[in-house]
Image (tube, rainbow, N blue to C red):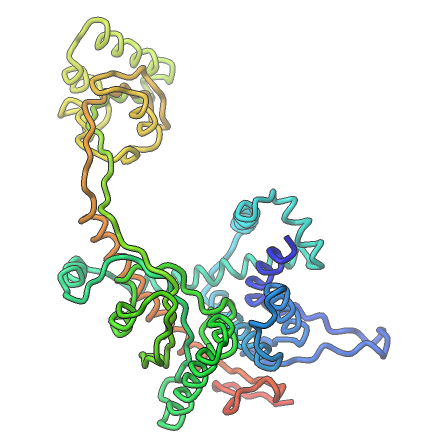
Length: 450
């Protein structure tokens, strides 16, 4: 449990805005002041922020400390992510993106459920780990802010057309199936000169040499990668083959599980890929239902009780008096989409008309008429006419292709957005040991280095 909470706290800690806790002059002189390690626009990152995040990483890797890089490298990695997340929170706030208490309550409930805890148990676990639950809620709020920023950027920039889907599916390079990947990314700054590119390539080759020398790939990602997921070991999870950038797809296809690629040059830098696993797609068969319905809605002229009674009367006329279902639907049903065609709903997947109707379908046999039942919109009488198995493979492929194209575009759009945001920001790392070899204050603001 401690390791689980520590892992989650780290994921949130790197997104925090600053909560400065500088000691006042009344404290003991033996207690050191909390120094500023980096300036990010008008905000600062304190030594205590960095220490807390590093400690969370160490707790996350308890029992696997050999996968962590030396402390100076780990601190740089953590600080890099702290800076990136701080910039995203600032940008979201500047754009007026808000998070309500209800949003945070829902997020708390979700985290508790994922960890098989009640919200009260989650609170106790957080406080037992030595953290403030108030700060924990603030961390969740910042995480939601960043998610909404991402959504805002992507929605305004990414569209997928039917033509793009057709082109992808007809392309000879289109691949089906799923693969589990991990990666190491060595980024190249926008407008980098030949020397910067050579330095990045040398770092990528150093990472490959370390892996060939026996270093675990996840440990190498923590040490060498500068991707946002570096501290997660570079794990990309399961992805469909059509989501892999075309520049890497051929390389991945020729790899076997466990193999590591050479350093591949991409739009943003050098990438090293490890294929962890693969699985093939099967045909997708689903059960479809054919049914018809009569819907009686309450209205200003028809009370809820009258609507219920009307549905019961119609049921009696269909089942006991053997009147024609379709004729009664045309005369009495208030469902605008089906009444004129005798209540015919066509063929559809179980929950296409909602879970209430979907649940009733499973209770009926072909030809059977349901007792009147209530939904949010009124009273229904449902007759199941038949079932069939439908091959949805093609439609699923189109849906997946649309998602893959959208995800690919989204990744590139947001990566470019982050690169531009970072290059336009004022960032000054004040502790020399935490700077990269070529680190200089960036952006157009002015500040004093300490």
